Length: 128
Image (tube, rainbow, N blue to C red; front, side, top):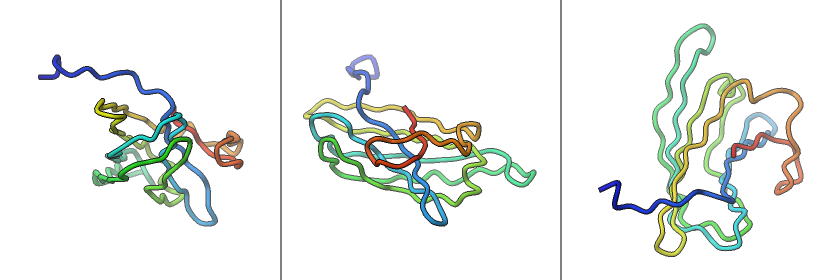
């Protein structure tokens, strides 16, 4: 079963949050030299919002293939959503090898001093 799977370490694939006019766009970044295939993302969130415990539905996104050194958007978040934690479980293939990784955003990652994301040439939040 699980012991029979050879799951290698994920490198060169990230999640990024970029501010837009009224919301935040969430992207998968493929910073590898080869495309990643059959990309699937499970997204969920939970935490306190306006004094009440909130839990989002688990959303599943099939992004298909992401070319080398490129990005693909998959979710829009309202600004209040950054006040709760988010989990992104990303799975993909390179050739016939499966890879997967959990990325976690916590509200303390957001501040007014956003990191400059070189892939986009604009400020945002990078989950590694």
